[in-house]
Length: 428
Image 1: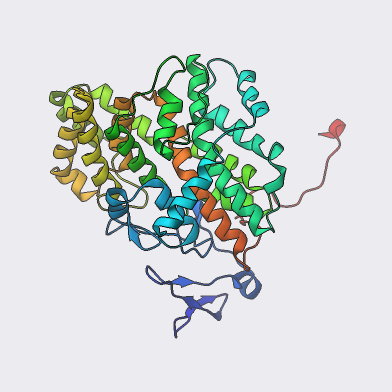
Image 2: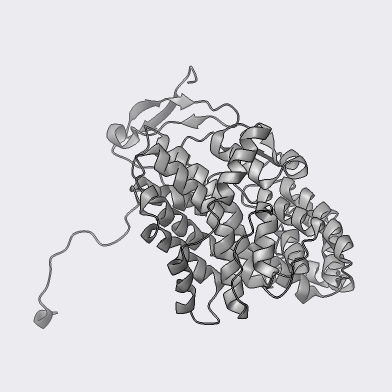
């Protein structure tokens, strides 16, 4: 705790509030007793200036373009680690030994299959149902099948449900895709890696062996790492808020998926890809840049800027390298990629974008990569949810284990009518 408290003067009185220090980042004014002492609340729409919890998982410095998982820079993890190792790190706080990683990966592999009755759920959806609608329903239904891991007060139950969610999400996501294209579901093959298994379940067919391309597998693994956790964003806060009521973990993750579905959150990479397709070719970029500068024009450059990052998104650097590797490995010639590179170059050298700190974010390139691999845009947010599940689960576990956690209960600034008397309908 800092030595000097924060001082507030209100209604002619002075109040002191403790200032808390984290291991890194800005200090925090502890206002837990604000209402009791002052009979006032703070007003913070979107909670952009409010720390809702204490967490040791992920740290972001938006001004410097820093993203750390348990202290490790995202660039190092994406370049040198793999998704299973990052998952272990987020859940347990430290990187695993070779033996620990092998045991963890084996445990996840043993939970990849879905209950056969749960698989029949898919047939209840319309053929053209959005994969995210299917994912919300199926994940929410997991608690109806796995009763032996829903006691949130039991650490063993929490561990088992965490492993199940991480393991089953690729199977659920792949099945949602298969159902949308009318192909038979593919059962997991636990001889493959976590990411390789998902790709096979998504694009493989029973009639022939699936040829797993190493460059594609590595690219997907990086995408999963880059989306694994991102501090207290909207969907993570939703998971924590749902969990604060004591809801089972499957329901909490389903709530996070529903929040992620929003176009302002998980749908940004689809919007960025659609924008690049609308621009079409590099020669049209100057016209669209001018449109983006025009306040009266509804066109916006999607994939640029970030609510948190006011510098280059560190995940975008990895993505740019990855997209080149995928295109070269698959021998893809796509004008969308050339347009993306040229647009980034022009925008980064334009005073308007520099002044407003509109740098490319992770969504700018991820949609291009996913499209090249073969995913339809309807699957983009599903892949985001698949990767983010480990972050949601880690955040949920941290919250449940926190002795100071309380049920979420935001307050409001009421602006409606004051008390008035009821008037019978015949006299109104």
